[in-house]
Image (tube, rainbow, N blue to C red):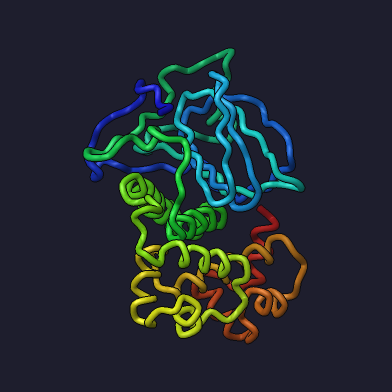
Length: 299
């Protein structure tokens, strides 16, 4: 438990209207960041590597890859990157009711020499659920991670209508995190759950490999229809959508972080046909690969 209880409001979901203040991919080297409090709320997802958060009472929470840290308004914390050469994150700052005036990044951080007590964001609490701030760490589903990546894309590229799309994505993310309070329990996974999770990890580490439904069913020694049903229950989407999500994620990463040609990016992500890759990327991302690379590097 780490919420202060000072900035909470029990309300129905229909009143939730999140405003997004910041949404970026981050890559940070090892080291400790300055301690701080924030006026709004933050989701910090570790994509790769390992991090830790140190609290004022001396508690340290380790955040491995694949876990998400929920940081509420007004709680002092100090983040540290533990892994070398870096750790990679998705960082999202938001408030629940779109009531905060955030003009730049510094508006989110409390200046302890001049604290604006009335500025702290109010956390929405849904009936039947614990506050999201009742725990530090979450294990977001693959679908939740995909939505966070889409939100970063929308917030960064800012196409027409991006604000309403970001709000919709954030509502889905928060809903999935609330659902995780009740449903994320490895003990309650289907009988084949652990083997399925291992296979999903293998898919994530090598998205360009062949991952057809018959191959997945064979590796799990399962009937294909039953495999698809179990996979969807655990991942939140069918195998085909899951591998496409992973491949497009890898393609976006390569476009942002490397100088590979578009053809090489497609091939490395699992799409050897450059024409198909370009069409699919444009359909899913709203722009061709080369434009995505140019815009992401400008921003």
